[in-house]
Length: 142
Image 1 (cartoon, rainbow, N blue to C red):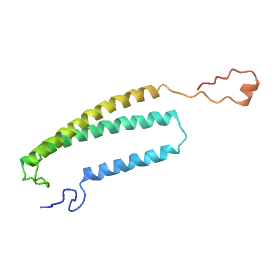
Image 2 (cartoon, rainbow, N blue to C red):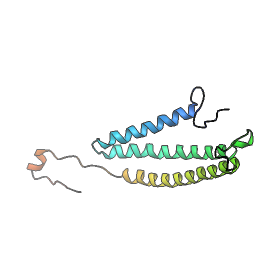
Image 3 (cartoon, rainbow, N blue to C red):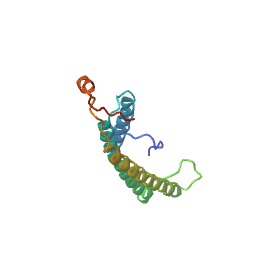
């Protein structure tokens, strides 16, 4: 038995590999956006991906909640503190995952609202010098 629950012998499971890659990709996106020229089309596209990501992470939290709640059903488990009953620890952890899923659903609703709002934003084409000198109307908004 592996006494360190944070260490997995052998190759990393596919789900673990993908969650690590997803987290790295989001950190890279944050870094890239800090230096990017703001563009409403990018806001829309990234918010769509954010909505998709929140839904996926919510699903993962729900799957993990069920798995954690039933983890001790078919295997002997222990709590490394020696003080807390492992079933109690697993039940509490499952409740934490249910809470996480609920908060992610709430964040998903906010992200969907943002996605809808940002989809209505556009930018007027920049007027050419000829349009300005010919007395054309130029709108300026902030």
